[in-house]
Image 1: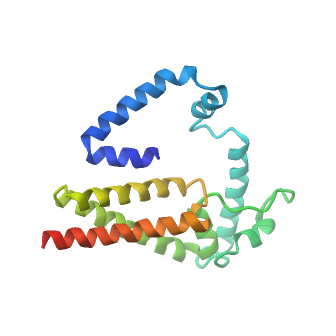
Image 2: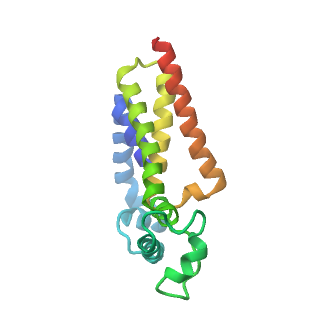
Image 3: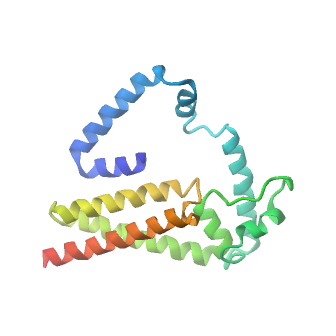
Length: 191
């Protein structure tokens, strides 16, 4: 969410002002928050809780899977099947990687990961290019929202496997397709 808001704030100055104001309010009201909320926000970038410790184990297993077959991976959809073989603590429960990029690399290797990243790079490059060189029409704002949502997705994919959830994965590809359609619309408007 924060990544999406920051991206929008780059393009819309009023949103930047509103974001700064909301951040100030959050900082000043943090002391009045519930203890659980306070601790979670205070440790936002500190990985010292149980979930972070679990992620370290999962990420290490994912990295070891990737190293076992770096070019082609171990096979699409086989992360959980191979997890027990690569996890150091054999009593650890079978899990996803909790990092989409690492899971894609472990399952499809460098070739699969680079292909996925190229799709993202082309989308962001073309989308930002349209944002820079197009007037601020309704389509422009739709494109901004689409790119901002995918920015948030790409950040979240670093700590969670949201592409492996059917509904969230579908929403990701739907937003990308929507963004591409809006880019074509903007191109047609300019012509």
